[in-house]
Length: 528
Image 1 (cartoon, one colour):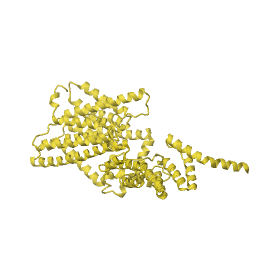
Image 2 (cartoon, one colour; image 1 turned 90 degrees about the horizontal axis):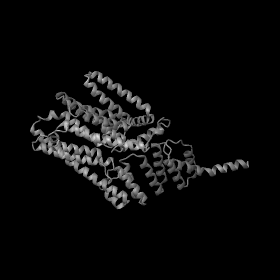
Image 3 (cartoon, one colour; image 1 turned 135 degrees about the vertical axis):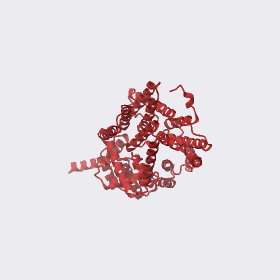
Image 4 (tube, helix red, strand yellow; image 1 turned 180 degrees about the vertical axis):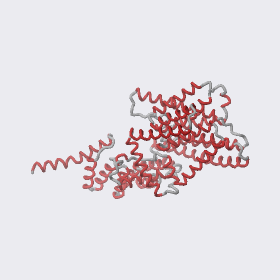
């Protein structure tokens, strides 16, 4: 595998190596989010640069030197290194008894690690099927990748990994496609059933999210809500549903939600039925291209896309840049041979279009990288002047606006804080944002508005104690002792979902508040 290393060291191969390495390993202490955001922004920047360079080479009349075997080796190697890091992380956590720490690798969540390793398996198996001299080495890489999936503790990933390798060996045994499909469906059913009963709270929480998403789809079934539609509106729908169904068995599972845990639902909410039509056309195009040139590499690429499609039912793989990269590589492998004989005039037009797309992506990603770095500096310095400067670059970033509103509130700039928070409210429906709006209106003395936002936060997440505590403090400040008394009793009687110091402190505070009333009642009863 390594004897002809020099032939793999071409421009295209090096570009893919850099792109995959950035998508998996990129981190930055210069941003507020040191893990996920750097991966996304640096990957967008690198991907835009690669698109420009590839298109420029094509525009000059030169054919891209793409070796899918070499590309598969790169993907396998990088993901093997990530698997080794994940296994090491698990060992440290296990032997130092840090059992509460999840194994995430270089990602912010086990879901990212699982997606990265799962989608790389078909490429590793493709290398294994092609190489003759280094099969033990490649087999070792495959074992490492699957062990990495196991230590991520992802039930979806473990089943997918086992299924992919089973498919490979069944293919080697010349089993019919019908039998393979039957086994695949059986494994999927088993995984869904087992996943539900192993962690029912997690499964029921997702059922609640999907039920509220159904209300969203009914309101905009054709065009959807556009990019960011879920983030902008979902929590309002969850609040409305829970308020209309106070006896809902999933009420205690309601939490702050930023993604529907299903890429297909997210696609529908963004673009409606039109999004599904476009997805269907892309799938049809890939099938047609494969039927024309059914190569071995294309078959493994289809398997990788199938893995991404399956993970998308239960998770959010497209949050992670490595999924974008491998998805694009898989599509390129499937369609590549179909476009080799395309007319020169059409190639020129396509190259120019992609160069323009790449330049736009480069500019936007550079602007976002610069804005994120400036935001981290403003956050560390707690400097309003720097925050105001950053707002020119990140004025459409709801998370920046949320941070800016909090800083303004802490600095006593109440009116400006309200303006920024309301601007954020147009982009983000969020439990924490409702609490901040309640705090701002409380500081302004507009208690009816404050009560509205605290109550809305409580409707979004009925199991939380912070809105009740905020309402109690607001009633005390407004001089409404009766409502404050009722709120304190409500806190004392409220069941706890997850024990924490904050909840214990709130409970203790309300018990102390109610203690004088209890003592007075006991004294009256004694006198009587």
